[in-house]
Length: 468
DNA sequence: TCTGGGGTCCTTAGTCCA
DNA sequence: TCTGTGGACTAAGGACCC
Image 1: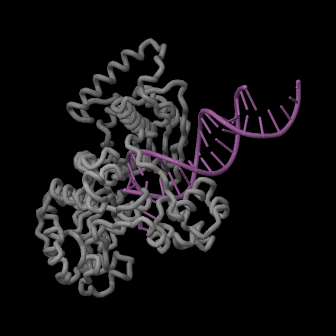
Image 2 (image 1 turned 90 degrees about the horizontal axis):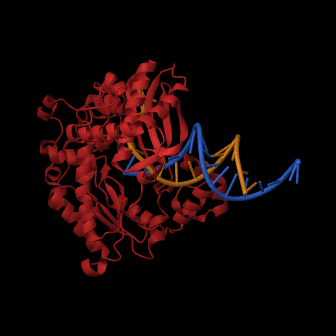
Image 3 (image 1 turned 180 degrees about the vertical axis):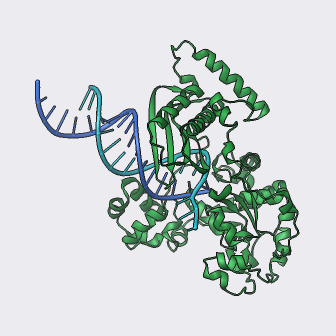
């Protein structure tokens, strides 16, 4: 999906169409979860601190995320995909791999299927997506990137929507790309590769596997060597079991008080246990994550003798781990995770006398929360500090726009007809309007780009022949 | 200037045990 | 009985993804 969260928000509030929209981030410690292409023109990117995003584009509309809603939209989109083939592997809320080899005889060749999928999602959800067609998963993912809209200094440019990497043409497509395009090459790996003189995927392919494994470790070295040579035989896996379940939260200000931290650990642990029960899973290992004010992050874990889905057991383990950590310097983030997951049926019955009563109480509280919301009931230790999954400490963290801001007229940003309509070909060919560079953007933007004059909007060849 | 949340996978190191 | 080895498990941290 293209700029998924932002696109969903724009669909909910059509008056935002064509405006820079930023989703995510809470308070002064938030980051951007998604930005509309109009916002990206100003240099706003995912994972950027929200304070910086605000400086880059003060007149953007900033919205808090609504994960539950995105999840519902995602389910409906995945259902569209499942109509094409049962072999769908969701990668996240807004991405999935499809193995369409069995569907092509009935429904047509893969590129045609891709176009059908885009049309159905656009019709049913009024959302755009991009599709990559290729003979392997990682190649399809790279092809998808090629098909997506992109941002030029002059404004958003609609992508081709579908990009096909034909059989036999894989290496021609792959080798000119930067090594960082490969799934698994982030900043750290890129630095190590640069020391080997590797910048492109082609450079990577020409390295002996042994030097890559020496530089990156056995698994990563071998994996990247294979990918760079176009080899990826990983199948589409339909039902991937979760490996871990966790909750973590950054506080609006560092916490020092033991009581407050214990209450947070209780709340997070209880939420994790609830999700375990909802998934009929039990966990053997409980992990506590602590990030201090200076961003130093530690994890402490314990493996229990028996798998559990009990809130009491998870919270107890988390609080024991917390008690062994010196939190005096101040805690910025606390997290509780559960791993070593197994079906709850496999859980061994405890001989502890009162466990049944506790289990029954947790089941009742689960039903209450299903019906009345997560803040309806909770462990006393967490309820005293506040209720629900989200900490009350962070009521001031949310920085979604007041309704008044949304109602405000929008004088600065030129809303293109292309944006309003979703970008038909003729409309896209119109010149992009004068660029609004606010003083705030000028002073806040580190990009030299921002200081450049706003050029006429170029229409790429891909766009001219595009299929939007 | 300041760095979310929810995940997955890998590496390294230590311990236990056959 | 002692020593070496390798696998399984555990713990902690790092890198990466969306």
